[in-house]
Length: 299
Image 1: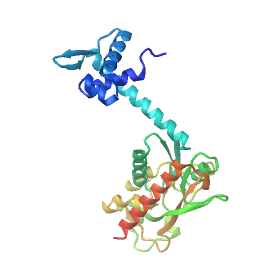
Image 2: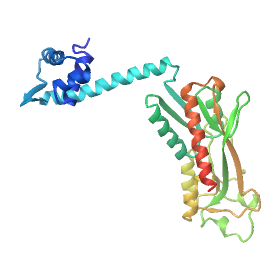
Image 3: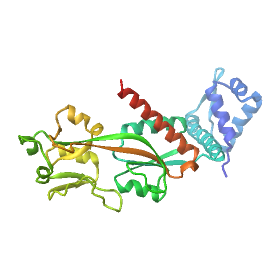
Image 4: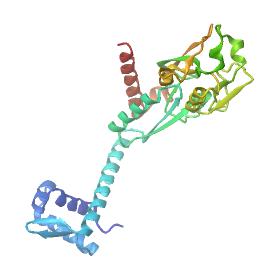
């Protein structure tokens, strides 16, 4: 058992923060004698001197400074534990788990996480990035509280939150850009396609044209980098490659058909209407942020 109580550490902090015994006594609503006795008892228990009087002011000794810094951490952790217990008593979840298809703009997700963390700093966030069937599996296996994906599995309900526009692109130096006619399916099959692999167990080949030459990667950013280096062509969400398009690193392919595609992403609560308050708060913040983004796009 600790020899020094939390209250005694709080007394030491109050004396330092209020620059004296009298002000500390007033701040803690105690008598000055009880404040003085508390510090004396702390020093006797630890067998060290933590405060010394210089003129009319109590100042920390070298040992006292070290103990004061640790006392601040100890008292703050105690405060956080009580606040966390209060959240649990209100039915608040200790953590929110999110499965996000990599098509979703990560900058928006991180902004919402930051906003949520400022409102509820004691609730942990777990973000899992998924591809294709990996998103469904996170939902079906109860590995996430909120799922953002392009498909709503049977038995679940979701809200459409974002339309993703895809563009077929390749490096400006790619052979496909040297043709003098509009490209079709047969043209594409003669060249390497870059594909992001399914993160689930079903190994879905969404968007693959069956080309013999194929480069499969596990991360969309790696795929974009490969395309910029001329290793192949691919369809990417326009919002993910805007920088590369603006800077001439990627160029839209002149396809006669299918050069652009659209996918609608939906947000799904794994527990539906029974989702916890923390999960619902996060979902509401996410929808609010997306509404703001859409309003800015219309200007």
